[in-house]
Each structure stands twice: as structure tokens, then as C-alpha cells.
Image (cartoon, rainbow, N blue to C red; front, side, top):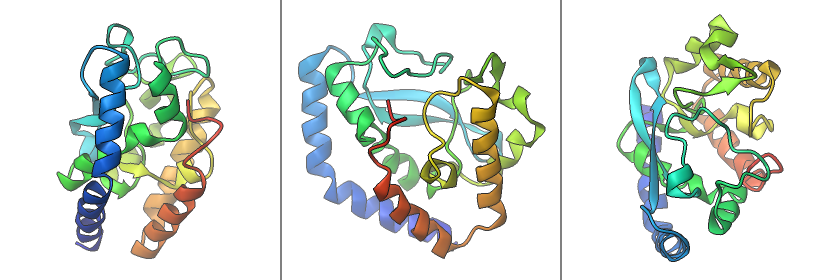
Length: 196
């Protein structure tokens, strides 16, 4: 109850305060390339239920990867000029505040992954049996793994294992105070070398 109340208050206030930024980003996306402002993708959430996550579209429509089979790379030619900026600053993630308000996500929690996400040449759930434990809570816009720097492409199995370990630690030690600390720490890593 505490976590859901916190999520509703934070997401509602953030959506109101960030409305001008939403409008500017939406206009820039439309001016640069044809297609929708938002990118929707199926992700796995709490209890392994699927939902549609919202992001600002950062790639050319014809090159978008709806299944998430190919992680974005540092010099990915699918990404638009505006897309590069909003990905680098994590602005592309802001529409997930709507997912939080709707109850599909939380502000803080394990990041939701696309169905086709791979670590090395393995689908995420093939890497470790502990992978499914992270779905005990709602997925988050940010989480313990992200503030520890575990972001970006998962080219190696170890890249996913680090995230899963952090996610399980978060589950085991959850408190509202910890969520607030993670949010404050997130502000320090909004611009990150692995955000591309």
C-alpha cells in the first residue's frame, strides 16, 4: 500500500510538472522523422504478466525492434539525432510515468525486459534460474541495478547476472526509504556512459 501510494503521488506530480518537456520532445520527434511520438513494446512485468511499456520514440520507425532482439549499441544507426539526445539523457524513459500511474510499473523496481532480450546468445531467462524471481514486484523506471551502473547492452552473460543479483538484493531489502534513496541516486546517473 505504501509503495502504490508513493507511486501514484510521484507519477501524477511528475506528469504534471514535466508536461512542457513532453510537449517539446514530442514536437522535436515529429519534426525529425515520420511516425508516432511514442514507442510501445511488450515487456514482462510482475507475476510474469505482459504489458505495453511507453517510451519516446528514439529510432526510425522502419528500423524499430518491437521484440527487443537487438540491444541499442553506442553508434546504432537506427537511432535518430533527437533520439540520441533523449537516450543519452534518459528522457526517452519519461513516458513510463504513465505506466506507473496505471499500476503496471513502479517508480523503483527491477527494469522490465523485452521478450526477445538476450545476454550473449542466450535469452535472459536461459541465463539463470533466478531470473524469474525479479518479477515478484512491479518493474521500475529505475532500480538498484541501474544506480550501480548496470545499464546498456548485455553483450555478455555476466552483464545480465550482475543485474539479476542487484534486483534480488532489492527484493530482499525493500523499504520505502530505500526507494527514496535509489531515486536520489538515480538523479546522479541520468546521464550515463552506457545510456545509448
